[in-house]
Image (cartoon, rainbow over all chains, first blue to last red; front, side, top):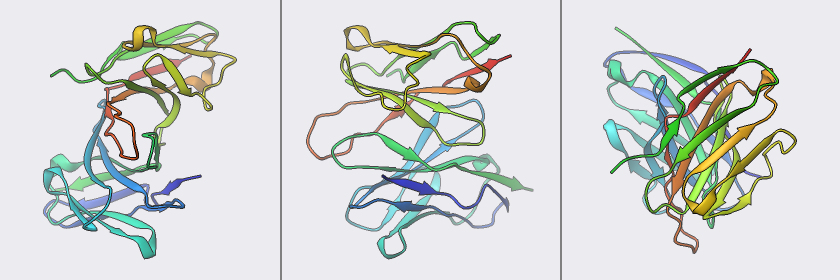
Length: 113
Length: 117
């Protein structure tokens, strides 16, 4: 069975500083990997996804993520965080052939002035 | 184009009462999902529909939860009777699945926040 681990429950970053959110997955084949963002009272918005090919993927809002098969990781990065990035971030894995997602427990990002 | 619509957005009920959530997926999307998101957790799949057929309901607590997707469009998720532990956000998502081995993006609604007192 597939699983996702997000080891950081909360992260606080100063506005303008760089950000890296960690995600490790467990899946027997090549996974489909995703990062979603959820603002309070809102649904999930897709930031970026990895299916195959280039291991560095670009997403919306200036986010990027790098797939590292050897480390079973798919970490999310942003070079300069804005106050509006404060939200909860979820990493998810999907399997080829069907669309059901398995989510991690999320990382809450707090942005300090 | 409208996104996934869910109603109500918030619901407060007493335990042992019934409750129902409604979802209208994106027009043309054949696959519909219901997820439950407990506080501090990621969403967990309850049930997945392909058109009218429930193809994955292994995580749906069938003693008290039921769902339907008549005509393969809108869907309703019901809990009867509700328990304290059912307090959570219930998310609906939809996707257009064309078959094969490709992955099809899911689009999420804003969710219904249920509080059981």
